Image 1 (cartoon, rainbow, N blue to C red):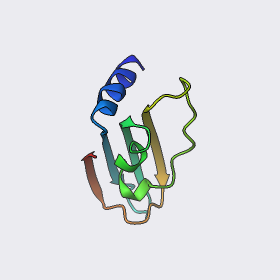
Image 2 (image 1 turned 60 degrees about the horizontal axis):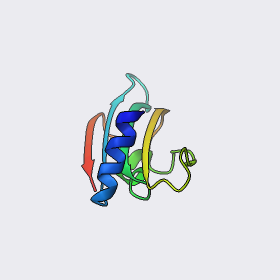
Image 3 (image 1 turned 180 degrees about the vertical axis):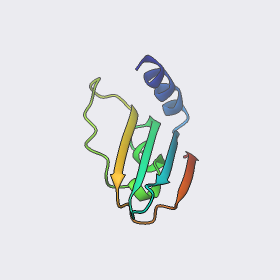
Image 4 (image 1 turned 90 degrees about the horizontal axis):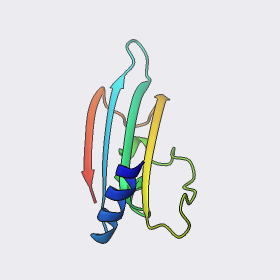
Length: 93
């Protein structure tokens, strides 16, 4: 948590976020297993996640009131519209 908070605050100074995610198709199904996360400016962190998990992230409660940094993590198993067979997603915004 200290690393996420420190990295998030540093990225906030540059008005940026970084995200990483990996997704693989579950054999013999239309479902994918996706593990993704992002850190950075609160408004940009969810957008740094892969597009096929956009809108699946829960709310962003303030751990520290009035914080401008955020770290996100999400694990999704199931049908994900637009998810490829195998994907490594890296993004900086």
